[in-house]
Length: 347
Image 1 (cartoon, one colour):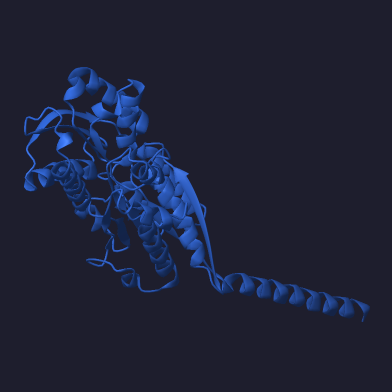
Image 2: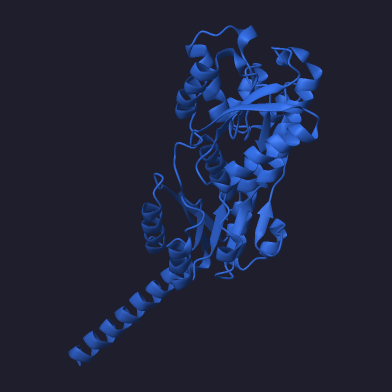
């Protein structure tokens, strides 16, 4: 009899433990989690650093009753193999959506294969994969901007200033001698930004003479070094510097400062992206202008898209083009309107 009571008590205890465990699982499972894994090509990129800061804040705004968010961010250090390994690590860590800024936009297949194997959707951002790769799977998306628009606007900004200020043509030869600082070899956005900026200047009636061209990998220090080389070659002949991003435009300015050029002997400098330092340089009249790349809008689109993909929402509500792409517009920034962008800057 005593044995039966002990067995009965043990059975009740086991049932109670099972019930408690079941309740614990139920409570854990009631909250959906948007667990985002991010990998980007290089942490030295100023624009991407600001974009990802915005993204973390936008993702936090998605939280509500029954929905939690978290994010892991990894730097690939400019190596595609490292990024491939990081994607596997992020999936193993339980990430249920990936945001990927490719090291090599032409080599995403291993990442796509991994994500498809584990059924984890990918939001590519800032570096757009080629169209054929985007068709490899139906859970691939892209958030970014049209590179052509940024180059066109940079050219228009430069043309407007040249027409308004005859002093830019310092040698009075009726032509503008210019140099270009380009992002990186073979990078689609870099090539398009350069080509369209020059096209835009010519379409606006500016006669150009190209003096030099250097690759500076989006990097301020590299741009300073490359600009010093061009200054030593062309000296006072350079009247206009077109840079694919603000950091390189500022690096070019750094080169002139290091060489103790007076303000009257400086060319005019134009960047792209509207980073914090770029906007401040426009406000301080160190850069003649920049083209604002809407990092806040892109961050918001990425966060909302990640939420929709995990919770079963409608990705189309983000404003997708062709069911996969979200493009945000650029904006021209000069001394006349830079304060508006600085006021809206959340950093």
